[in-house]
Image (cartoon, rainbow over all chains, first blue to last red; front, side, top):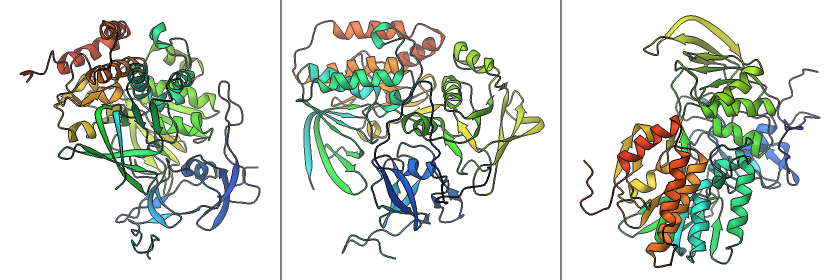
Length: 124
Length: 369
């Protein structure tokens, strides 16, 4: 029963609040997206970081110098802790960026590469 | 670069900003509200408890319902209020009198306004301890967003740092969401928040440890626990260490006003401990030393949402009046009356001391030494 379900594990259930004495949660449409290549589920229009958290993902990036793990922290787009690479764009504030179907979300290592202005895609 | 213009720009769509927008629009002004979050309502939408305060500010109504009331009011002015969500104002350039803004992460544009109301709210304070950067150490506001806005379980077992109102309320909300609260530690010698909140928590058997704090977070990649100890009068760790098993450490040690834009606009700022940081000097209309800028809500000093809504009303009304829109005579005095009644308690006395420091009578020779 107490098996550790990693992100995207088979039969993995989202860590959502099922019963609440006061609130009802009106989640939108459930969509599939990718986290480091693994397919996960989340709710369209809700912040990417919420979907990741519900899937048990806690580490969103690794710092450039000390290689420290970073994750969710302020949830208001101010602290930089939840920066990730989203559809090739680095330093995306995942706490205030809405999830879309098919989105490719990646753990960011270091500062991330600024997208090439020529074609608008991340250079590697 | 694309540019948008408005009569009144309201930066921040929370309790203060929405109130300001409604008030300015009701006077006839064209208003643009810019909100960095995906949802409007700021901290209100995360509050499941019934508000205190006065009837005028919806006492007895749960916070998230107050947000709905404000949004309905805004909706009745939809011809004159435009709203941009997921849009961050990134700076104000005084030499061009222009704001830069970013919608999402990549669409950049400029905003021109005749009057601007800074209702940017606050940000969480952090305290230093080893491993305070580990995933699982979250601000109290962030924990509320996870569980009360998006219905995501923030963790299984939490250590709460701080027994002010936010620490107490969020602890109770965590229990409502099904999260176990291991303990609340409070560095001070007494509980900072209201007794009614503390009593609810004590009745549920959660210890509130005064003169205690976290010494370090435990865990390699994510939080797996915390070490707590007692504190002496100098706030140094003393006595035996206790290890708490938890996957979540929630920081509720206070907030700081978000004031960068006010500084960029050259508004005279003052450090006021009672208002929890650097805030802009203002007159009774909530105007700052820059005649184009008003301040309201937590950005003007950390207080409660009820007061933020009244300050927003004052700022919105004043901004509209300064543009020549007719406003009801004596309305500002009435709003100040409401603020005074909200600030009657013990916490209010401290706020009043702070307000006395930053409030100026007028701006001619208002150096306020």
